[in-house]
Image (cartoon, rainbow, N blue to C red; front, side):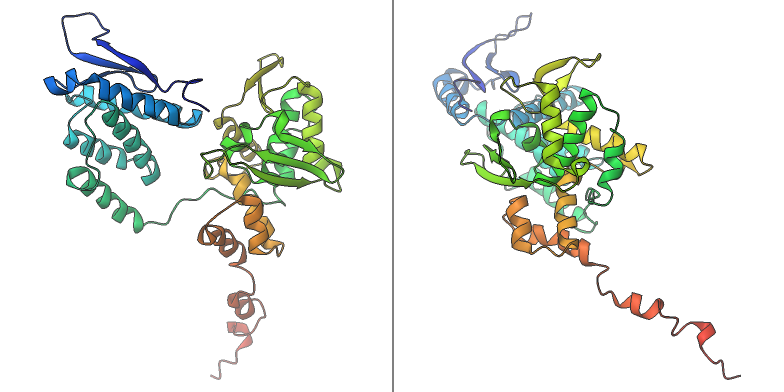
Length: 366
């Protein structure tokens, strides 16, 4: 996505857009809204450098989901500043306090995302934050150490033997249920991230006699859009076949080009509006609740984790699992295999399921 087609930053500055006598300079941005530039006369007069930086960021253009995340982060940061009486730009101590505030209820990944957004806004405004030293680095390092002592929370994998129960929740034939069954089956088989799954267009699918080839145009680990190719085989059972599920959904959706997975109106009417990534999580959680499972432990990642874990349990080789999940790190991929094989040839089964060693089996020799 080019900066010219979806500009990240508007290429102009102005006076305060709100009513009042404030004569400060402002930089209008798409992601963060109007940014008040610091009162430093040098910075306020040096708008050319700021605008050049804004145009450069526009050319680099963040992915849509990243821009939405940045907007959310920026709104939270501005709300925090308003409550505590800080200016949103120029106070590193306030940023450190914001991180400490977030750390009480959010993961390290979320805290880093919020910091990335706030830091980006400061760079655009000409006041880059020092993230390597000082109060921000100290708070972040303390939170990292605190988190390192906790077990990382991971989404419950949606295993292949549980998946049919989830599909049964959407058994009644309707456009919405066809779509949601396709999301589950195709999302599981392709091991796509939720943003990649809803980011698919019809043109990205190539149907063959063996199944479907997927052309992944852009992903979390491929921000420059080099692309990747995946394959999803047809299943022997049509009721449990990801290719059949996609075909049935396309019958309902129609052949109009654009997003593969689209929203439906309340009455079931079709639209061509692309689903948001959160929709994948909602479908999974709804099915988990309906089957009596704890929906809080499932997320959009459960499909991807479920494919990798199920493949490991079935004896698939690590390199083949990584080829489908497109993991670059062996350590990350090995997590799924370790979880899958924790019961395999476990010595406690040998000791406690044979009857040997039980109190009844022993002669107490009294």
